Length: 252
Image (cartoon, rainbow, N blue to C red; front, side, top):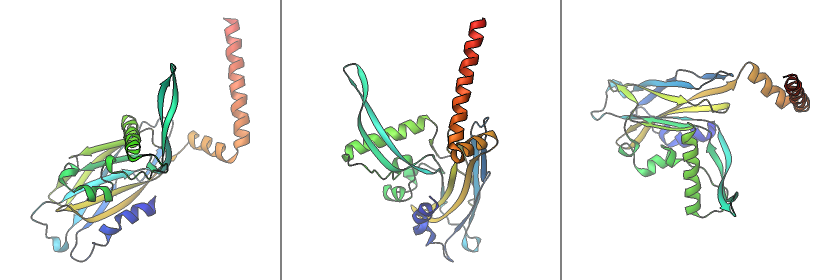
């Protein structure tokens, strides 16, 4: 994922020269631990814009921040009612759907960049490049992609907050993005884009790690490294709890 982010940022990174502004970004948490009580996190993405010789442009620049989670392959299935029974009908597969996507901008995206630029940098959930792996027709793929977006928006995994990035004195910026309690563990990226006159003139990336800790980490490690013993233990616990529940019921 890191390579893909850097590859997409390459056009902007090539613009960082002596006469181009640069971004100095940071994030409030770079290491997020998931425990049983994890209810999500509120991340603060902030930083500064460094202009050559400290001279700011007459027209204020815009900032777009994007928080992305690990990519996943996913298959979307459409259900249809046949003879009174709901069954799986059409389906579409995507090779690289982000498990989490959140974006904030200083203004609505359509007022900052054109459609082409937004698609290149994936600025907006409708601009995500999901890489379909099935041979569905374009109309069907569009319908399934919209269905995926709707599902993840309702789960809090896809978030858009246009107009929420605050820029102070033209050089300091800050934005808050929510991290859902349903996120998966892995490496996340916080990307910041500086846009001037419809062009991305600077970009920067910060890494964020989401990992399990405590008992959750122990269980995940046990399931991965000692899968056979983990399975036997799970069966034994299930049988024991069932026997205990039956014994209690007989005494009542």
